Image (tube, rainbow, N blue to C red):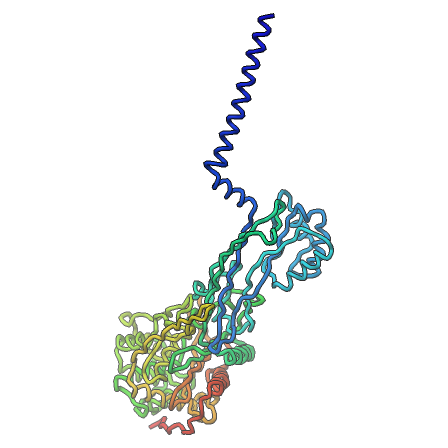
Length: 582
């Protein structure tokens, strides 16, 4: 009996000790939570009952020179779902989304998303205009269906569709610029996202009137271009018509203010639509004006003559004996028309676009002298226009030239350029012999209106004013009734210009393709007080197309629009008569 009582007391003591120990552990833990770690656990409690959402910052707008929007951001929504809430009613929800969103929805694929197993979150449709998404959400709510939600987004839109598309570029799915101005100025255009933190109920619903914290987003900066929207639209249409009518592979049209070197219009055809994402193949999205290289042909004769005039080796009336043909390093070279020996002036060589006459004149320069002038005019180096992917062109060092290189480069074969390089070079002739870097952006501005202009680069003299004036008078003869491009003449204005026709090079073999040409026309007006320069390039038009007959009419129309648009009054003077023969 004593033994049984003793055992019971020991058990009681052990149980009491265990109970006291358990209460001691709980007490110590409670002291830690409420005393030592109170702040940390309070924060964890708050975090468990809060939710955080991103407040996306809108991307800055891209504007034309007059403040018209060329690219902007609008409110959008992305639809999401909780499959555990939507699985049972997936067919009904998918049907409503299909009805409201059309081809953005694949009915059966949507059902699979709404029934995704072991998931509480899926994306249904991204990047919808806000009003479109709200219509779909309202229809789902009206049907008393649950589980579909929305997240705020900002969408990139291009109000002009194809307008200046190759200059503006576009953004990818993450909203990052990947081409053109969108890419070059991506850092400035991109804003800083904000956030919103708020209290939620155990079911995840936001608690009205509860505490919340907001970190304000910072919108991206606006970028102002030098483009004139109306002139750009007209040039886009006119160039597209010319490419279609001439059956060309592609075409370019660039207009520059010769006084400031601002590009006021830069068109390409065919092009693409960054707004609805049509025509997005590489051949359309490439910016041919700065990325494509080609042989410019006879437009280069203006540079050759400017170099000679700067050295005092020619004037517009300098007599040149033009042979009927030449053999240079075993290669036959001729003009585009058959003739015997001609007596042309330097102006006549330009007016008639004689390859042979240009070669004869260029022989007054050594290889290195001619090469150095080409470098001064900006060939073999980027133009400074500050656009992504720009090419240097191809200019072989003069130390390695053969006689054939010297001869053909003088009239624009054997050298590869970009259209922007040609605009910059001939722009120096139009600008009294001074060359500046072309620009497409004039500045940026914050959402608060703080503007940061982009300063223009200082111009530098390439040739003397007399040399520039001499070549200008030669170029005026081109647009005269007896020149190679009378179609470029504009009533009331003096127009200086030069045609170009060059054999195309097969990019695979590096050899010329007979019967396939790149034709062009470069001109500026008014010739006696230059304001605008326009360059037209058409690649691989029909076989008998020429710069004077095919590209010059496009120049005429775009230049006429530019002069009218910017209020450049006719000068009223007539081009001086320049002798073409002697």
